Length: 294
Image 1 (cartoon, rainbow, N blue to C red):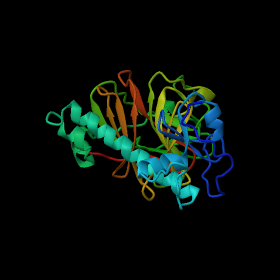
Image 2 (tube, rainbow, N blue to C red):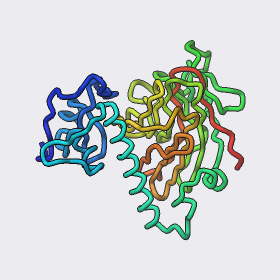
Image 3 (tube, rainbow, N blue to C red):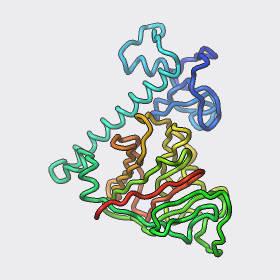
Image 4 (cartoon, rainbow, N blue to C red):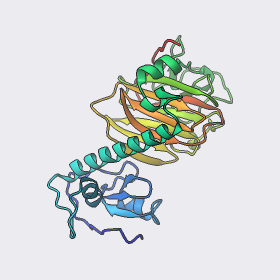
């Protein structure tokens, strides 16, 4: 374990939020990848990472760390929430620095991440591919909306159809250029929205969006929000209850910028030169692509 680890034992209080994956209190911060974790995460995927207590990570960023232990009056719930906000702001700042280096004169809209400009320049409205819809997913006539019915629709067999999770992907694939689209998630209490490789499997448990290395997603669950990729969950600080998720895919730079309404919630970085598709996983109600004039 790295030397900067502080053992806080069972000093957390009952307000401590729980890890989405393990159900244990979130009391640590991984300095290597900037994620909030529990003790099970620490001895698992983060075993050899640089770990500190959340109070210490929060106090360091606020400049209130004393030589013994940070004096913080807020509850653990508040500390974790505020630390997540600070981490998100750090990521946004770093992202802005990278974009500035890329050349704001040539692509000012990329640097500013102005959603109105993104809609005007790169906005599109994908359509859902009925041949990929799980039997419990009903597709609207205009191919924009996916509804969880709870019962199987009589779809014909198809090699592209999801057979385990209530998912569907778009007909369009993106492997170059810049693309922006939005998804209305207002009526759904639990859904996962993002992109996946066109080559991602469609059958069995390994096909769940966000749970494999071939998909990058935002998850809304009981008005809590997460960034999911390859079974790694990042708790997101979202203002209010976002009604729309926006996605700006820059294939050349290798970034998927995810918005909650008008705020950047998360940025995924990967090699998006292989064809990817917008994708939905819908556990209840309806989600739909927002019509953007292109």
